[in-house]
Image (cartoon, rainbow, N blue to C red; front, side, top):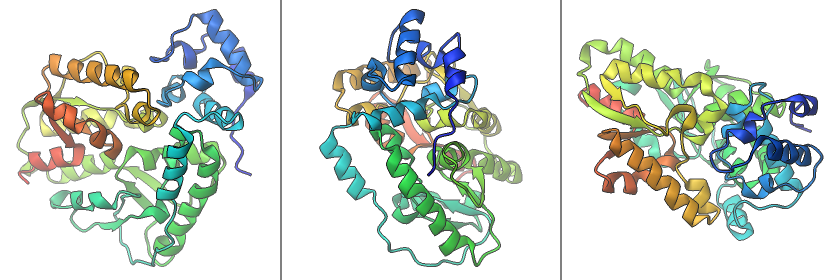
Length: 339
């Protein structure tokens, strides 16, 4: 049940092997990439399975949308390879499990899905979110994080249950048929990951940034340009949904923020290092974090802008110590509105 929609023949005949050749964390020439690809396709041991930092980027790099990263995660789990040490993985499986304390709630459109990050409900405030409903909690957790832990089985088990809970407790007795997802993770889970595993999603999904653009247009007479240089920290889940990335530039244009040109941005973005820290690859994490933040500082950014809570929590102290302000995109928009 919930088998990955993956075509082995597409990978086998790919000549560029972008999924491996463009990886920023594993270096290999084209011949080595071919050999490692064959090992993965045949279910054999491959250094890719042990060296992968689970940044999701190969999902974006694949020109055929053939889900190479999801296959890597499946292969890791099949072989008992634990990117994050087993005790820490098991601990997270307990902490992030559904709590079964969900109750029906009357909602209206637009409804903001905060997923498991109830602690960030305070971000849903001011004129940007006037008249919205909020849903949150562990019982509607999108579970996309298990891609970092080689636990696609947990996604297959828990994501359908989260979807059922959303339908049963929120949508069934309302006129709402679409959700605004506050995080890239949820939007990516419901529009990319779920279809890849054949999991049915009974509602439409709106990316937070698309929603913000609509509201900024409604409130355009109240906008005072930020007039600051900003760097955007792309979350790993945005690799699943690159079609949404134009929203970032559109928001910055509307609020008068200047997105700096830098090396580690857009398709060349670096991880926040949450995954590498969880994997206890401390030297790699320190190096990636330093290169990333130095790149922002050298480009003259005053703000480091986030969408992903994990990225924000992971990087905010180092960002602050570098002299920049860490801030969520929605909060930056509220500043432009004088709130």
